[in-house]
Length: 190
Image (cartoon, rainbow, N blue to C red; front, side):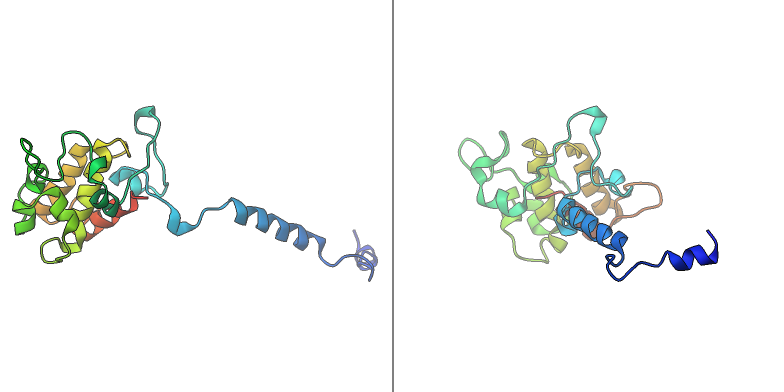
């Protein structure tokens, strides 16, 4: 196409201005309708998998279960706790203690409190960063089948490493401190 052809190809006054732009704007509406709000995303990956950028991973080819419930749910629904985990003392059962699941805690609440007492605590000196609060919810979520991308053993390792070393290493070269682990656990809750 030479210069003369380009000049004669100018749109007339009757032609719609920039039809490609209008088509693009229509696509934007479709994209908006199909997208999820960023804050509504639930992390559905193991700790090491969470660092790879995706939101979902399937453990060993099994169907992924990502229905983790919040600590508030578990606090308000003790009847929904999984079998063998007791929110309250009900003879002959004793309430399940935090230390029986997550030993070697540094605060009185961690050493002597029950799982329910950790969920009910509002004292930041007894549960820094609400770390125990979210550990309990994750523990109950795993045992009740609400999520399957994290195991009880992995959860206990996260606790152990933060207590023993001050941080957890989800993957080589990355350190998660208590608040980081808490944020990860919080991201697994609906």
